[in-house]
Length: 358
Picture (tube, rainbow, N blue to C red):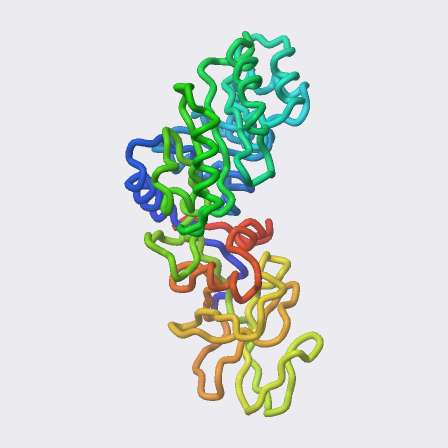
């Protein structure tokens, strides 16, 4: 009998296949592959090395970019939140890192800096999401200052971010695209607007650069009823059954006695819990794949264990491997049972989960 603890298997061939499918949707666009949050939990350096086809990589923080450079990644790397302090600018220049500019402080810092070499800049315009980005009315001033600065490598790239692209019939997205077009009218710069959902739903937003994130990792960014592309899960999360218990009708399972059996049955205990990143708020009935069938989660998720109902006549045994999400069980479904989104589940995988490559 071999007992394995929580293990996330990363299928790099699925990653490459997903990239190819994404590229087929926007064949004329370059690809900025989004690797923030440890490549959505899949391993930052590992994923970067496996995507030589990408034209650039996007990360959220400077330490992620430096980790890629330390690993020998030489492709362009873009800081999607920009730099946080003027002291970061020489580091960006030395390491050939590109940055987004989205506020006045960044504009002033980059134009006034003393740099040995100019930086490549992406100017982010707020077209309606109201998170990061300059007001569209301020675009001419920012564009002029960045275009005339000796610290800026020309030409700059123009971008925005869509807030409702997962809905293929949303007026807000149409309005954002229209405002972006109006704002950049008269320029001839490369542009970027499309995230994973927009790559599928809004071809008119592809421009010269697309920015796939979730879609790369084999997770649809669209509601289940609107899925139009099939991608393959890159991560499959599994663990072993470590105990099987017989319980009688009326007996409860787990903390708080939140689940009571209405019949005699068997309970399987699986070595995974919220300490590994499995969602604590997964509801009773959340499916787990075991020996070719779906069995329901019963009782509260513990730090290190979950319990599932196997059925009185089940033949499962200690050591059998259960799939929590991945091949055969979409992480999107687990997210719905946990009242969250797939992004959170993938990013919450903890350090104690073993990572293996397929």
